[in-house]
Image (cartoon, rainbow, N blue to C red; front, side, top):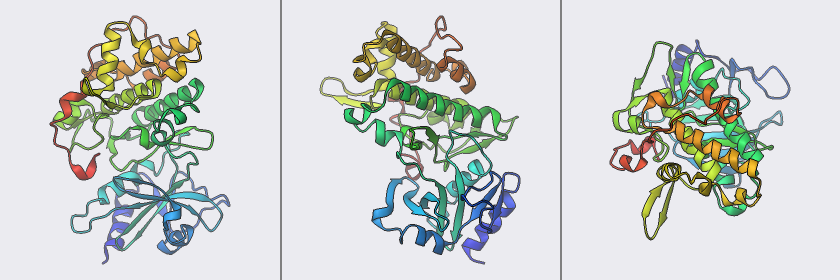
Length: 360
C-alpha cells in the first residue's frame, strides 16, 4: 500500500467525527463545499489550476510549504498550499492532518475556508479560498507606506475579527481548538481587508475536560506565551497571549522585536509595560494615527493597548477569555479599574530550545 493510500485510509478512519472527505465535485456551481464535506482533489487538476506550479503563480512561502494562486476548472480562484513532507520521518503529516481536522467543519467569517486536499504519493496539498490582500504582516507591517492605508476603523475591524475567530475556536467549537501560532503573517486579508485566521498546521484539539496539553513547543518567538515556551503546557490562554502581542502590533505599528544602538534588542511587550507603568501609553500609539488629532480615536487606541496588556499578563489565570476580549474591544466592558499585572517578558525566552522545523 502506498503512503498516499495509507494516508487517505488514515484520514477516513481518524476524521469521521469531524468531517467527511469526498472524491466528488462540489454540489453547487460556485465551488463552495459544505462545511462537513471536503473535496479530494487530484494532483493533475491542481497542477493545471496553477499552471504547473510556476513561479508566476507563487504568492507566499512559510515554514510548512509554498502557496500558489490557482483557478479551478469551474473558475473558482483558490490558494493551494504545497506542504513540505519528509517521508523518512513522516514530518509534515501531523501538520497536514491537524489542518484538515481543525478546518474541515468550521464555519466562521473570520476563519479561512478549506475547500479540500490532495494526497498522491509523497504529494500533500491543501486548497483554500484565495485572499486578495495577502496577509497582515505583508500589508501592514511592511513599512509606513503600507500602514498609511490602515485607518483606525480598519485596524479595529482586523483586531475584533481575529478576536471573534479565536473566541469561536476556544469557546463555541467542539472540540475546542487552540491555534498555537497566532501572528500577523497568519492573518489573511480578503478584498475588503476583512481578517481570516489561517495556517492551522500546529493546531491542537481540546475536549471539555482538558485543562492543558503537554506538547513539544512550537510557534513563533515573540508571540509564544512564557509558560508554554518553558514548560510545554499548552492552554487556550497561550493563544490569548499571542493575540495580545498581535493587538499591540496593530495599535503601535511596531515590530515585536526592534533594535537600536543604545538599548540593543528590545521587545514590544516590555516597552508597552514600561509606558503603562508611567502612564505614557499614548506615546506608543502609531504616529500615523496621532496625525489625525482625534482625541476619541487616541483614547480608543490606548484602550486597545490596555486590552493587549491584559492578554499578555504573566499569570495565565489573569488573562481574559477571548469572549471577554471581544466585549472589551467593543467597549461593552470597561477596562478602567481593572488591574493589569506584569506581563511575561519575551526576553526570558531566548534560551528556550524550540523544534526548529516547527517554529520560526
